[in-house]
Length: 315
Image (cartoon, rainbow, N blue to C red):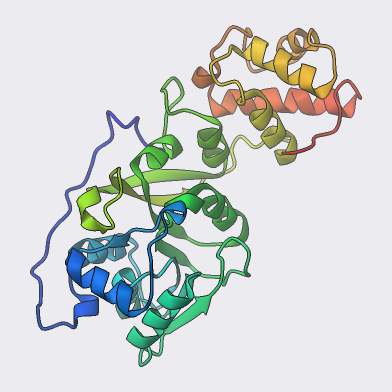
């Protein structure tokens, strides 16, 4: 977990000397050069997928350096684009798997890395295809799938750590502290599983097409499970249930949630009283720590076990 956005420390992006002897595909690219390449391969960036291509090779190199990759590492990149990150990953890793959904970009990546023996290009949707088991994940993620792919990686890939780029707002929510406006259902579900450390902030002008907001690169590590809920399904069920009403007090959110479950609203008071989380029910949801929510979820578990609440569903 990292500091609230107003407090978090940002590392400066170091701009290295550019070697203009490199081919156009592996240099820092201008908007015109990227546009030309996209037209060559018949690619039209899709806003609904949040597609933006990183232009600066120096930034790409810094992102890869932050991953501390060695030849012992197998790396996964999701959304290879025009190979800006892939180039540096291939220089450091034992093997790199690149998943790209766009057939035209698969063609571009295949052309670029045809002679690179330690790069495998996989055409497919990273949300649905089988993911290779790797030691590290390094990606400029398509913003439209940020949440889904983050939780899939945490669930299905046993990586040491991941270096991932997100929209600034999304990254701030991942690392938010209790009591902040960014503290949300996403924050809690993520921080129950992992920690996010900011690496660098990247201005929107470093991408083509230029997105509306800046980006933040974060290092993600799994969180030691202490405390751990007695039933993760019930924990997630409760979080998704009560944090549908993030501006409510705990008592009111529980009452509304219980009503949607078809049980007596006043059962909320009994849950609060029996919980050992030390909560009164008057707490604002955005101010409750994950540790307290775990204890509260364990009380919900007991109520389900005793038949006072229905079995978890839709978590």
